[in-house]
Length: 87
Picture 1 (cartoon, rainbow, N blue to C red):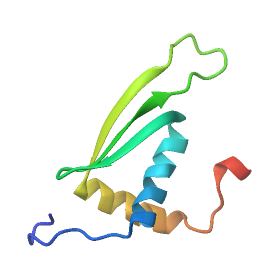
Picture 2: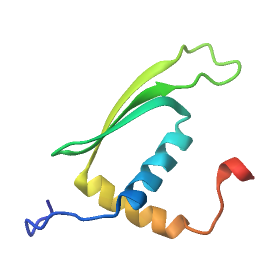
Picture 3: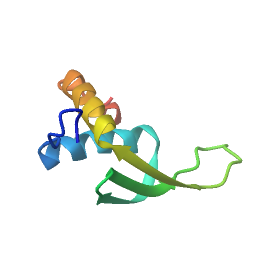
């Protein structure tokens, strides 16, 4: 809910695109995405980088509705700049 008690409404493809960017940026694999009353719950494993002695770590992250609004706006700003995976 926003400060005016209006629910935040987004298209799923916009939210998933923004969450997907987070997944790519943090090199996550085997992810689960759940919608909760608090926001979007993301669970997955961070892939170890080559030469990184740190083992695979479990990530459990909840994106609040306010964070979803922020990353949605950031995603709109990034649109058309291309994927890091394709560079």
